[in-house]
Image (spheres, rainbow, N blue to C red):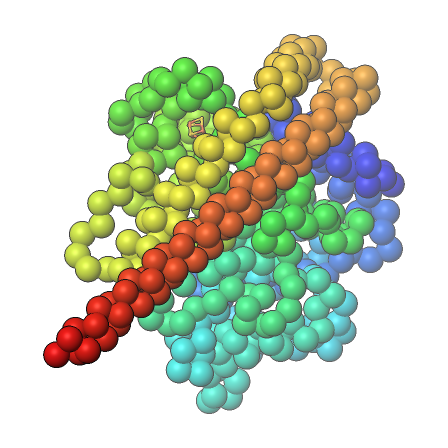
Length: 424
Ligand code: SF4
Ligand code: F3S
């Protein structure tokens, strides 16, 4: 059985080697095989496109089949299971009766009209809503994981004008969930978080209750196009060389390990690597505050009289500008960051060339570097907080000054009126 520290080391090493799965999954499977009983998992799909199940299917080495056979007892999954109707509901009933299971929910929960915008099935003649089902399944679950941005935060289903009054799983339940966001979530984020829950319990959660291990780092910090940003080399169209900031990249306001982990298994790619801006799909306010996806937000053009959309664009523009502002404030830290990134690149290259993934010296070096990066990120976060405080103070001072001005104006006015009345 490997320790939590070793687990985290493997995750970090996975980052540098551009994939978690080949490193961590075999060890996870080995550790799980030693448990007396395979952990019971229910994967429940509410209102969803099923993108996260398909992402989960893309887990590599071992395949999903191996995970299902050796590591977990996945009793329910709307897309993958063959049972349906009463038979499927019986599986849920039996599992709830036993309790102590991990509940993974994908999709949003519509709450309008008593939840009737989302029907899970029939009990006799009576439709059962997703709200009812989630409450029922959540009541005996040991842990609840919200998989994908819809389950975690509401996502596209809950975007303005949200006709079905859809909400996240935690909001529907009024209970904490471990949020594995993304549209869809990366297979490594799903498998890695589930593994941590099974082997060590709840992982360390950061902003919006997401595992720090996968969502702790700002994309802009580790983007390979960062130097182009520094040098003012900006792309004008998707597909161009250069930093994609001016064509709508949300990297500066998005936190995930996409730049280093990358996507699509062995093909090693990700949105920015494929010459298209990051659209902030892991963010709590995705997609509403990311739109339009391919526009530089401060220059956003909103047609019509949609005040909400105008407000949104202002907020996002402010957020992005703040991200960039901080980038200048964190000048000192950045110098060291660059050196560290170079070291990570060198180690990764050496590891890939030698094919020696078991070299513990390299592993230790990487852990050390990532620990240092964490300290730098913390510094940057502190600066961000300070800047926010300053902005807040400035805003309230401006408000006060405005109030005083209008007060003295109305005072002068009534004084004048009094004088006129007296003259008359
Ligand atoms: Fe990379 Fe986007 Fe930042 Fe440019 S703005 S450096 S493309 S994350
Ligand atoms: Fe999503 Fe941006 Fe990563 S769009 S997949 S968070 S690069």
